Length: 459
Image 1: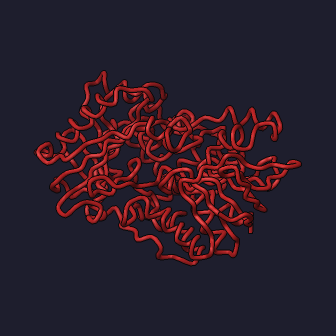
Image 2: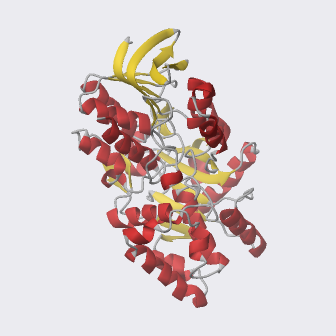
């Protein structure tokens, strides 16, 4: 381990790894320290029985055209990640027993005719909105903005579903501008995709860039504390040994950074209270199923369960207002092996199914519910299951913290743009870089965006 470095980065999630790649490519001496044995945070992968299994359920909205790819381009390694687009076949939706292409026309078919006019107006407004228009909507909730066109709950629930996929918060608190920027980015770039090699290929690419430029990445290396003297960060302590640094960047949870690693006594009281009051995104459980035979060519499917009117109202309420989600299958499936067959033994397939949930659930029951839904989508699949496992919020909590939520600090009207935590902290030379400081975008893209912004400030 170096005794002194230019920048020490605490945490190897996407934000930390991306920043390390950017700074090292610009000549900075970087030491990245990750407490877990795998790099990537929520965007990591592990091996099981010959399969490469991702943490979570991922499809990357802007793929290589967005901030994840921009990190590589700015670091001088534009081809460091091999992206496979979510096309041929295109993203699909399973609805009322049928799997069909997921299009705007499909969404409009499920809205009452009287509301087709307002729905068309909403999409037209999204595509024609100027930067000046967007600047006025940062602190307007998506629900309030939709209500300017229609108060139909089916329309609101539809956008609530998209909002849940992009931001993992409900439309009554989601920032309209943040949502529209995400939607426009996906629609404009048409580059939604997945990296060959699994999700871990993204942080591993950043790791290679760091090491190629003389930096160091150390796994299974938890930081004991951040050293602060006379109001300035001086380095970190690892295993009782000090590593001095001109700058310290935390990719850890902002609450853990301020309240534990640094210590709240080093910050103004109002800053500490603001950090304590930050709210996180929703929780998700993810079913991972390994098969000995391929049962579908689809790369990604949005699944809408066939529910009674009463059940549908309860699901709509949860998407719109938050609160407990009923235990019914509904969410996103992807098959990483349909992007990259090498993620499974020859002839095998992986299918993941992610759905919103609460903590402390009966995970065996969730497993049963999600499996039954998959068996309906893919008849005969049950004869090919090698194993099935649930990644619950409790699992995420063990290695990522933050109450096991799916992204980090939510992109809500009180936590975006100028109201979002900044990269700079009140402690000199102590910075934040993650899906919780600056940036905008969907999940991992939000974290990469944070890194791109901070890199420009530090060099």
